[in-house]
Length: 172
Image (cartoon, rainbow, N blue to C red; front, side):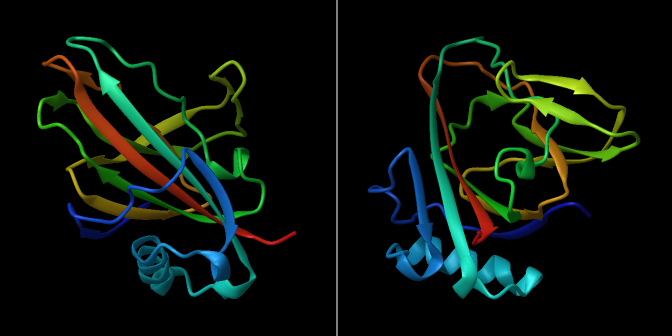
């Protein structure tokens, strides 16, 4: 399995999280985020005292029948070079979003991803798992997991899809 389901929490305190935040684990003052990092780390057993945390708070408001262009297949270490593992918290997800999945792949060749142009440069991948996203779900996966969001679509106007991406990284 490429990912680990931690638990579901629809009611959390993340109102004051900015769009992007980098902070050391010891400086983290949000108890909810610190708890899910601690809980995920039970799988990885890393000394968090020596880690930096990067948090992206992505909030999408979808139009009816709008197809969303998502990232291609990638590993989070392509954006965060010293990434150890990733946690994703799906919150405030509208019920009317269809095909709302996170897809995992097996690498069969060398691969690179162009974040600037949002495309795969080369590689040959085989989908091996898919995770069906529900509001409140928290999952984690290791740095070497190739993944991408599915091409989801909303059947209603102004549907919400909010995610908190937390990357745990070694200090340089």
